[in-house]
Amino acid sequence: MKEVLVDIERWRREGKKVALARVVALEGSGPRLPGATMAVSEAGEVAGSVSGGCVEGAVVAEALEVLAGDGRPRLCTFGYSDAEAFSVGLTCGGTIRVFVEPLDW
Amino acid sequence: MFEALAAAIRAEQPVAIAEIVEGPEDMLGAKLLVLPGTPPRVLGSFGDADLDRVVTRDVHGELASGLTATRHYGLHGEARENDVSVFIESFAPPPRMIIFGAVDFTAALAKVAKILGYRVTVCDARPVFATRARFPMADEVVVAWPDRHLAEVGADLGPRDAVCVLTHDPKFDVPAIVAALTTRVGYLGAMGSRRTTEDREDRLREAGVDEAGLARVMGPIGIDIGARTPEETAVAVCAEIISLRTGRDAPSLRDSEGPIHRDLVVTRETP
Image (cartoon, rainbow over all chains, first blue to last red; front, side, top):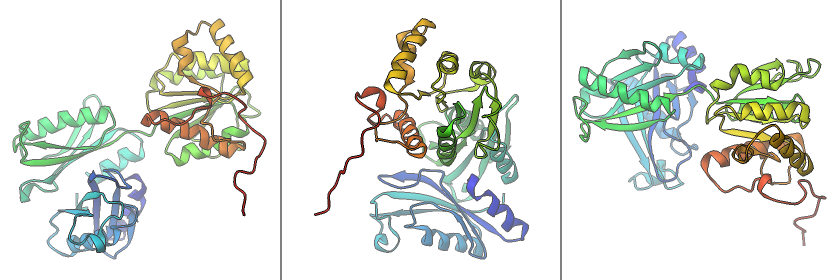
């Protein structure tokens, strides 16, 4: 969280909506522990990360959807066992759950 | 609430956030921010006083041990039910590393420790050496005798913190180690050759340190990777700290024999 504060505050000063994506669970092997945080502005700017780079693209897409849509938070699961494993899975074989929400609090 | 969280993280004050990440749709994203203190401050609500109370209690426990975890509750905080999953993230203040001795190795160790997230203090009794200009990467440079500095801050040290004694001068390092042994610091390392280490152990015994105390001192400091430069030595020291924390079996110099530095050998020849 600490590493994304500066970017979040700048985006908010610029009047941009911001979404937060945080790893809330990790099963098996994975590069980042629960608490790893990525922030995404409505302009598509990104700070921080939730994995070793494997699922960031998919998380940005989820975050932008949350910001553009009804703003409901969502819990996303990414993992090898996923149907989409080949497109957005973790190559390390782990599963991560990422909570994506608008930063409106 | 985010401002309060950001302010606490910046000020390096303990804070935790608890958030419903699974459960009834209208509860998703509901959160509590807990700032410990007397009295503790709690911001936000899950919309149920009992759930708030139970989670706040659990958050205090997680925060005390610096843990981040998901816990499951009933809608009113019942244990052993699974209506809501609450992600509790603790933001503990950064661990501290106090480096005694303002030598060449100090700057390299301070740099590597900063990368690992430590709040670094460099302390030396000699004002000529303990200067900001020599250690710009440190959070704090203190001119003081090690034991006096520890008398001031030692009570705050805990299992996540580290004390590294790099002076290898008995006049400084014996009092520093004796003082560090009275704290709860998790890692205590002392630099020096094998001869210096043996000599220091004798002096520590004379100063009244028992075998249990000696066993806490990692000396010669660092794991046995043939480190030679200040930077390599800094990596060896930090690797030792990590391996002791995680309980992994890394070869500490303390537990091996033979020269710390060997002549350079060719380890791999190209055909």
